[in-house]
Structures are given as C-alpha cells and as structure tokens.
Length: 190
Image (cartoon, rainbow, N blue to C red; front, top):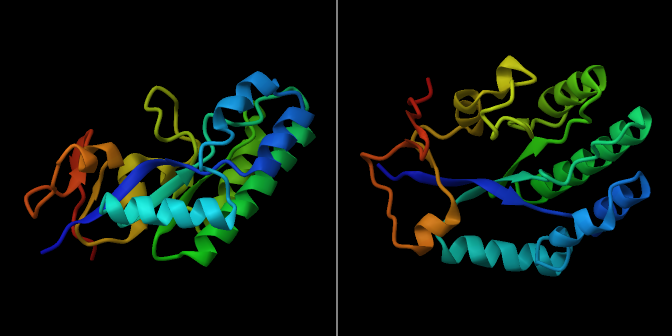
C-alpha cells in the first residue's frame, strides 16, 4: 500500500496579508522574513510551490501563516486580519483541493475571538486545525485540533507527516512507516 506524504510544515504568506499585519502594528522587520521567498499566493509562486512539491514527492501540504500572526492589542484588527487570511487560505485550498489543506489563523491573545475563528475555520472552511497545534507547548484551542485529529481529518487511510527536507535528504517512507515524524501511527480510517 502506498503512503501518502503530507508536509505539515508549509507556509504561504500573501503579500496583502503581510501588509495588513504591518498596518495593525506588527513591525516590518518581523514580516520581512516572510517576503520575497516564493511563498506568496501569486500564480507564479503557487506554480513554483507545486513544482517543488512534485520534485520532493510531497502529496499534500498543510498551510500555515504562523509565525506571521496578528498578535496585537487591537482585538478587532487581530480578528479581521485572521479572517482575511483564513479566507485567502480557503481560496488556495479550493483551487488545489487535492494538494493543500490549511491550519486556521486565530487572533490570540483574544481568547473568545480565537475560539470563534477556530470554529469558523473547522466548521465553515473545512480546515484541519488551528494554527497553534504544531507547537506542543501550547494548549489546543479545540479538541479537534490535536495532532492525531489533524491526521484523521486529512483523510488518508495510510498517511505520514513529513517535512520536505526529509525527502530531499533521501528519506523514503514505506508501508511500515505511516505516522508523523514525532511519533504515533495514523490508524486506518473507518
């Protein structure tokens, strides 16, 4: 049985979203690292991304804007920025449903707004989790946002999470390998 390779550590940084972050108070020095790295949502950058995924034999990427999040005091501005990028990610996923899933952006530290946005991302947009589940030092904003639930929601009977650099270094998953790099096996879905 083939193993579906899922890159759970992928970023798309739309330039308009980075501009919005700066407009709500995130320093330009912070967003600079995410610019001009072929990680925009332009047709050119997305085409290059798909070619790189094919070269690394990565079937699916789970997209994340972290760490480029609107962690600002202005509650409304943070919520609006997250909603805007979540909609942009939904558009990307919709255009390439067989290649991308997404983590939702949550406007922390505003807990009520963050919980509402996570619900919107999971229930309305069909995202696999909130953008904070990859950092195991933080608590999950939703029971549906644990690492195991992400693998279940991705929907592969045999799946494995892998960083693309593993593939480029020659790592080849096989039928005996079906789980995340950080441990745990992805059970067959029933």
